[in-house]
Length: 105
Figure 1 (cartoon, one colour):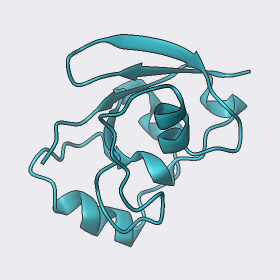
Figure 2 (spheres, helix red, strand yellow; figure 1 turned 60 degrees about the vertical axis):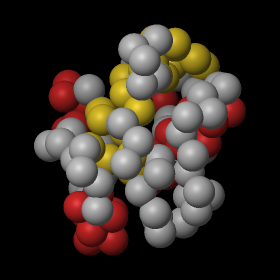
Figure 3 (tube, helix red, strand yellow; figure 1 turned 90 degrees about the vertical axis):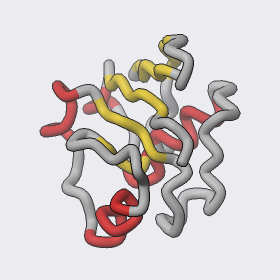
Figure 4 (cartoon, one colour; figure 1 turned 45 degrees about the horizontal axis):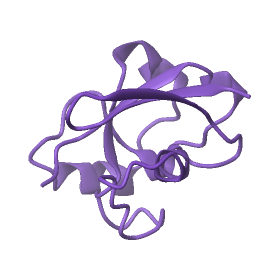
């Protein structure tokens, strides 16, 4: 299985075996990170699953959709490497992906 490294808001880092076919959001929540609210459950209708992706991985991700872009604009913590974790499907191609849970708005 591919590995996913998650950095919490307090800087705690945990590497987990990610489930292929699940979103990064689902993998984070399944790994015990309660601070990632993901209120809409992955429907791309909120920004409570906001993460910052390690710069080295940005090119490996699908482009940001217009809906995701609009939702990220609603965050005061948006950065160039910001993504909604519900919009990133995890799989072998992302083995080693590292994300940081964004500060809460």
